Amino acid sequence: MDIKLLVVEDEPRALARYRNYIELYKGGFEIVATASTYEEAIKAFNTCKIDCIFTDIIIPGGTGLDLLEYVRSKKWDGICVIISGYDKFSYAQKAIRLGALDYLLKPIFESTFFKMLDKVRLKMGIISPVTNKYYDQLLPRYIKKAMEYVEHNYDSEIQLSSAAEQASVSAAYLSSRFTKYLGITFIDFVKYYRVQVVKSLLEKSSIDCSLDEIADKTGFCDSSYLNHCFKKLQGVTPRKYQLDYHAKEKQNHQSSAT
Image (cartoon, one colour):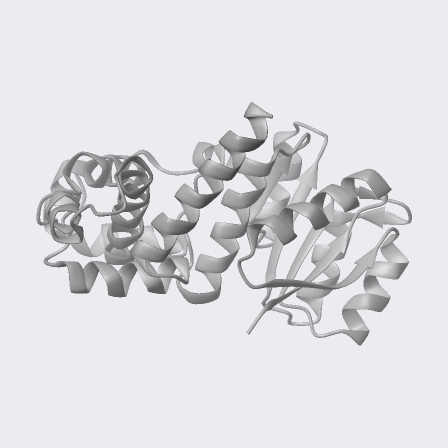
């Protein structure tokens, strides 16, 4: 089932660019409504089934934050991404308080947009850990320490107790605070991080590479479990992801050569 989007943007060129990115991504997204003003956005929200809202922070008649406040007042628990041309920490803070998934600064290039769509897809199944720099500034030191522990030990067996020791807090405290700050359990973060490493290895490896070897290098017990976790987070199998990636790289190379 496609993720239904409401895109709120008053600049026609920017809206066209976002449409193009979503079409290129091919990841199960459908724009069911667009709006160029606050009033249009409210009307679209009240008449369409919306899973996710992408909104500029400054729109005629209001702001993206006003829109997010409105939809939250209606008990809507969908996903919202704020797009802004303003590098203001106060905006990001309010977006976080209102439960925005991400706060992206213009100009937004394809790679950044695709990463954001990855995060949206993850939240539809497993809520993604935060990587945005604004969110990162708000994370306690012990959370960052636990995340660093995963980054350095993803290829080995990871225990919550070991990460807690590294972060100088109890396992129970780390578990509860990790979920509070990142919206994801520590164990799910480990799976998420390992899948990101798998993606990188698949992109750098030949099509006939061994998934058992990749599983061994990334801390998965076997290729079957790797397949299960990868498909749950990415929506496709590791091999399908790799084939699609190399096909796109080949196409880009051919285009640049002509």
